[in-house]
Length: 241
Image 1 (cartoon, rainbow, N blue to C red):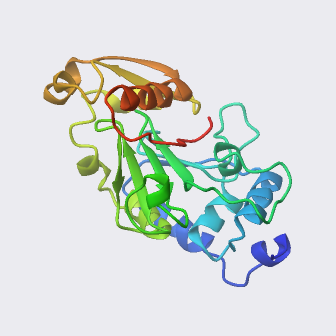
Image 2 (cartoon, one colour):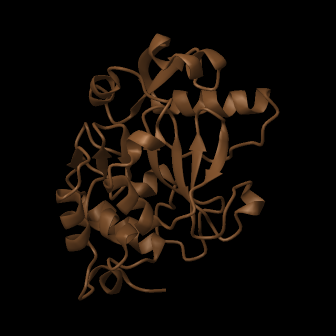
Image 3 (tube, rainbow, N blue to C red):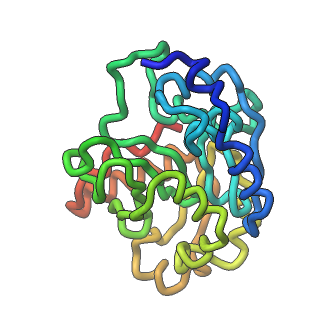
């Protein structure tokens, strides 16, 4: 077990490189102010150093709002009323450091506005019903209600988010005017879409759907409920928001 000062006080932290990549990114981005105490608590439980991109984001930000707020990357959380929850809160970290605790199904590191979930695989993805290998990113897709392999690690995923390729990734899931709707959301909200994104109607005409802002837990709950109704694998833990 490494102490927090050993994890945080490294000579070559990743944050300057991450911040530079973000500044040069074509993606609209907002870096939320960090809650330093909560960030250090999360870093300690994760047992990763600030040399890693994961550790850098947790220690130096309250989270990232990307692509007009469509994608939320969890960091150290923010005490502000309009902030994101911390990675520790989203993943239900123990209140005090517990060296024996780990996120069995994987670490939820991001959400998107329509209930997509980005998670970092744990040590046994197959047992958790997730594709891919340990340490690899996966995505719970709200249009299929299943986990998909992203074939990249966390640092590569962050670089991919900054690359401007989200428009292609979300092709068919966004509608005319989505930017304004995403920007209007509070961080604890998502967008519920009807007919649902997994329906033929929504696939054929995303712009013809009816949408409203609701608590993100409601968006995630509906997705998990319908996965069960359709006989799909239980998506498992999607994050606590």
